[in-house]
Structure formats: C-alpha cells, structure tokens
Image 1 (cartoon, rainbow, N blue to C red):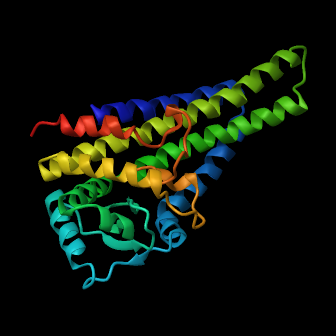
Image 2 (tube, rainbow, N blue to C red):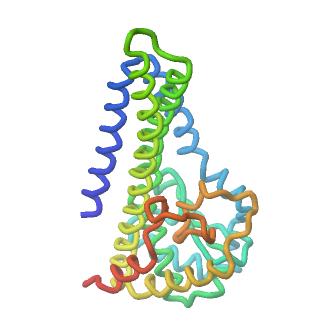
Length: 281
C-alpha cells in the first residue's frame, strides 16, 4: 500500500507539472526550467552524499574501534540482499542516523556518536535496519525525481510571478495577472506539500521494511521514542546544517523545526511507533 501511495503522489506531482505547463503555455520556458532543474538534481544525485558528509564532519568508522557496528551492518546487509555500505561517524552528542548514496553500490550509512550512547544493541540494530531499507528501496532516487519535478514547478511559478509583475498584453491583462499570481503562489505550495508527503511515506515504508528485516518492530519503535526525547533536550548543533538536510535523518534533528504537521519531513513519532507495534510477522 505504501508503494502504491508513493506512485500516486509522484503521479500527482507530474500531473501538476503538466497542468502548470499547459496554463503557462510557454514550452520554451518549461524546457529551460526542466533542463536547469535536471542539472541541479543530477548533481545532487551523484554528489550530495559527499557534501552532506562534509557538512556534518563525518569520518569513516574505524573497523577496529567500531567492530560491533561493522558486524551489525554486515549481517543486516546480507539479510537485505545488498552490498555492505560505507560507515561514517558524525562527531556530535546529538542522537541520530541517516543513509545516503545514489544506489546500493554507492551507499553510505552515518550515525552520530550520541546515538551509540543512548541505544541498546537491539534498538541500534533497528535503526540500522531502517537506514539499510532506505538504501534497498532506492529512496535517494525517488527523492531526486520528486525534487526535480517540484523544482521545475517552482521555476515555472517564478516565471509566472515575473510575468504578472511586468504584465501581459491584450484586453484581459488584469485577468491574466490575477491568474498568474494565483498560479505562482499556489502551485509551488502544492508541489512542496506533495514532495513532503512522499518523504513521509518513504519513512513509513523504511520503518516497515526495517522491522520485517528484523522480524520485529519493537526495537525500532523503542529507538524512535528515545531519539525524539533526546532531540527535545539535545538537538543537532548548527554545524552549518539546515532544514534542507532534515529529511535524511531517521528523526527530525532540529527542535521545533516544523510548525505545521503538513510541512513535516517525517511522520509523527507516535504514529510510527503505533504502526511498528501493530505489525504482525
């Protein structure tokens, strides 16, 4: 059901793009926006993992110092049927983890020093199973597709705003301006909401896939509760970080980062826990 929902959301995002292109009627502008957005997102797809690791000052996990972590990821990767990803440690007391990389052959899993201190072995394994599920499900590719479409919509909306500001010719100029302003304001908002809904759906799916990998959802449910409480008292230090990277982490690392449920990059922890605890194997 989760995969079907994601297909529907991507379809809605694509439909919105086609509608905007039809209403604007400028195929040239649509093409320029598409090329620009594709270029930006292709760069992100191939190199964003390096930028994110540098942003959070992540270092490769020493095989001797973190032997237990390497062994845990190796076992889970084998069970998931994917290559063992590279492991990185983020030097922060904040408790969190994320996975990135364009495909299972170029995947990276990063954990903070803080998460290693507050979770027990089973809880940590649940978190790692969640992150490896992101890798197996190719969530970076899906997120890039969604970002590309949303980026094109935003670009077209920007063109619409400029057109409204400097005017259209003809008798219906005032009506055109009103239509363009509505288009410029509403369509980017709708695109963002759909993109965030896709992000939340991917989190639910990774929760489910990770729980099935371990044949139990209780360790991950317990870990999510601990991580949420920890973030309330110890959010991720700035370190040059922004909300644009929040979706990567297993829980939102920034306290009070989102003020409306619709704009959350992650589902509410309570709902995630309820789903995990209600799973049957």
